Amino acid sequence: MGSGVQEQRASLTQGEVLPLASSSQSEGMKQTRSVINSLFSGALAGAVAKTAVAPLDRTKIIFQGKLEAYRLIYRTYLMEGFFSLWRGNSATMVRVIPYAAIQFCAHEQYKGLLGGYYGFQGNALPPVPRLLAGSMAGTTAAMMTYPLDMVRARMAVTPKEMYSNILHVFVRISREEGMKTLYRGFTPTILGVAPYAGLSFFTYETLKKLHAEHSGRQQPYSYERLAFGACAGLIGQSASYPLDVVRRRMQTAGVTGHTYRTILGTMREIVSEEGVIRGLYKGLSMNWVKGPIAVGISFTTFDLTQILLKKGLSRSL
Image (cartoon, rainbow, N blue to C red; front, side, top):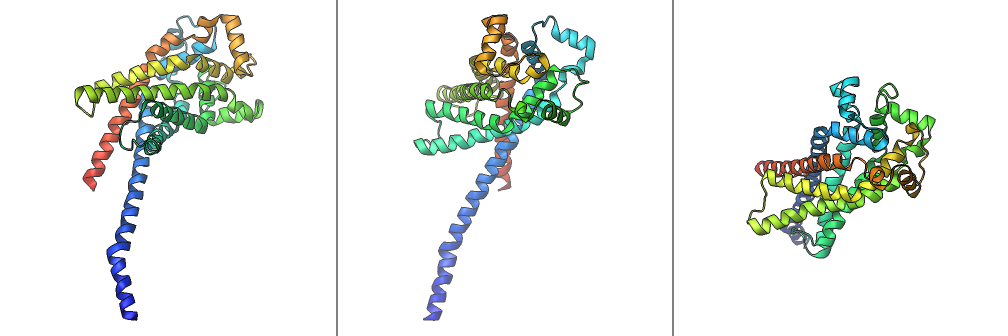
């Protein structure tokens, strides 16, 4: 009898238990690789896109933060040199790399979760879940990286003698203005990121879906991805721009002499001093140049990196 039990256990082990364990382990490794690939692809996408538009991005922050902005890029070039237009880019990279990595990875995870919940696993999500996945991804990334965004804004609008490096910004703000200052402007950021990220991802995914339906090609060409991303950036940033202005004003209040404390209070002060269009939409024309370029590059870089990584993985297997 004992021998029979042992034979049965051996049979179960060889015939059932090991394959189930192997299948579960393989699925876990596949999921882990997918997350790592998404994180890497997102980090690279954010770094490439932000470096490409860094001079325009810095000028936009200054343009939002000051009343006078006549020939700003040229004046900055004459007074501080060409590479000064990339000042603060190191802080930007410190923020953008984790932000983009988390955002793109979170978007892939939320798409999977919502797809499973709504019964669209592996297929394009319906419009509402598609919008929700992007909003949740942007919100997740913003919540986890906000102090770095605050530091980047400070470095972009202050003389280079004021802060020597990223760590110095953290130390001086914490010591002179308090730790809460690192989260000044957090609420308008979240309120702005949710529609921005939601509309950006929604537009990009929708355009890819429509393209596949009309062209019969599942994968768009690179220039088509850039165009889809540019449209996504234009729509997303235009919708959330006033809150972006409010966020920057609150972040840089400590060095501009203002005391912005609430979203509505900041909006009222901007409108009363500068008007609606010249205040809340200051720099929007520059954003229409910078935003589509950055978002187009970002989405395209992410997609192409994902495709390359998946091809490399399939060959290794």
